[in-house]
Image (cartoon, rainbow, N blue to C red; front, side, top):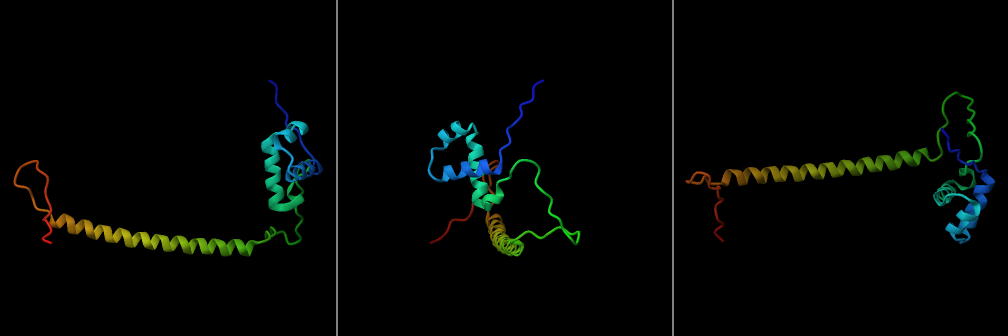
Length: 134
C-alpha cells in the first residue's frame, strides 16, 4: 500500500507566495509555477490576512508556549470576545422573548377561532365560522 506524502513548505516560501498573490499575479499560473494547490495558496493568504506573517506556520510542530504560573495564557482580545458573546446572548434572549409573545398571541387567536366555530348539522361536513356583519 502506497501512502501519499504531502509536501511541507517553509514560512519564507509561503510568505513569498502570498506576497506574489497579493501583488496581483494570476493564482492559477502561480499555482502551476510553484507546484502548490490553489486552495493552499488561498488558505495561506487568509491566514496571512488574519494574523500577519506569524500566522503562516513553518516546517515542523508549533512550539509550546512556556508559562511561569502553570495556568494557560489568556489569548489576546479575550475581553472583546466576552463582550461580543454577551451582546449576542442579549440579542438572542430578546428574540426568544419576541417569539414567546408571538406564540401567545397565536395560541389565544386559535382558541377564539376554535370556540367561535359552529357545529355542522350534517355528518362529515366541515364546521363554519360566523360571518362578519360589516
